[in-house]
Length: 392
Ligand SMILES: Cc1cc2nc3c(=O)[nH]c(=O)nc-3n(C[C@H](O)[C@H](O)[C@H](O)COP(=O)(O)OP(=O)(O)OC[C@H]3O[C@@H](n4cnc5c(N)ncnc54)[C@H](O)[C@@H]3O)c2cc1C
Image 1 (cartoon, rainbow, N blue to C red):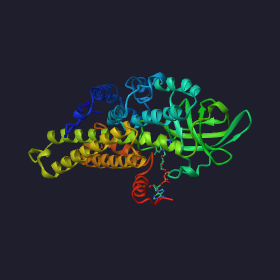
Image 2 (cartoon, helix red, strand yellow; image 1 turned 30 degrees about the horizontal axis):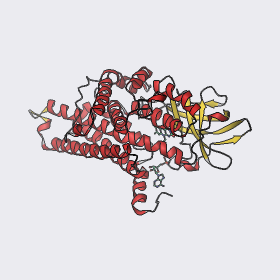
Image 3 (cartoon, rainbow, N blue to C red; image 1 turned 135 degrees about the vertical axis):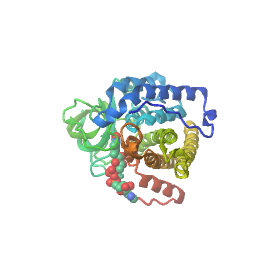
Image 4 (cartoon, rainbow, N blue to C red; image 1 turned 90 degrees about the vertical axis):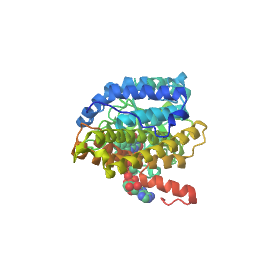
């Protein structure tokens, strides 16, 4: 990739609404992405490899459990800081942000919120430092948008549980040390179980040939009569509401992250448009290109405010799941549209790996589908305002 010259757009002086701590955390993440992610990410994406060399750096900027209390190894930050870290990481690459989101919101969060004290002590500090990497198994081959229909199940065998089933499309699965897996007991009630790599009958084959999130490893989780120690069941919450709370936290991070990807595409296109000369003038001087750029900064600014407000509500524990759905849906679509427009501004250069835009665009095709599809989030808003669920 060409040198990273990123300059963050802040058209409405949103920085003035952030505390000194927020800016400190954000700037540290921004600096780290520029130094450690930008130089290697294009190569990793081209090779379809997760760049494991950045795990320590992610831990150091607080990307693993930003809001998990320090007593468990987390960074003890607020929701705004968490969002800003996700924004900066996704400015670099949605796949890297996915790895951090899964570790924080889908693995550390359920252990912190629904786990026993022993589970918290055993897993959280290692997950925060990156010594352990985790994954989250909810989606199944036959159940994506409708996870409540899951078929993965476990049986009480007296001194242990026996787990059977399969999960698909699982980020981090090929290298994860542990998996937080959602499965039904004999009464059909959903519970979270911590499955460790090495348990007999547990395998994690990788999913190849992705055109999207290539720098993030994706795979399956297969459970063939896996013996799970009873102390690995998350004791403090069950039912579909438990994984959905994890998804709230991850979707909130995605809402911020998508802004990062959009900012990078906009900033790249703005710079290019001022440098590229056609018909004797910079292409930035043509009205059609200005329209694209002006609409981009307008949409980014609107998303920044929506998400800032969502962060304030989450800090007060008042953000609803439907509000999070709206922000996730709006921001990812916004980012994808900006990526497509920005790609056009770069002409043929836009399709090369010399610039980040095409990679962002392809990544965002996953982001718009995972953690609840674009359609489903719309239907969640519809349900929230009408009181009628149109998706069941
Ligand atoms: C790269 C990647 C990483 C992922 N990582 C994880 C992970 O770590 N853990 C995990 O558990 N899952 C993960 N997922 C899975 C992801 O969450 C699912 O793909 C997603 O929930 C959608 O499920 P599906 O792909 O089965 O689509 P489907 O549910 O089959 O949907 C297909 C289409 O039908 C539409 N549709 C479905 N139901 C309705 C309805 N009622 N009304 C209207 N339209 C409907 C959808 O909007 C979509 O457009 C990942 C996915 C990807 C691509």
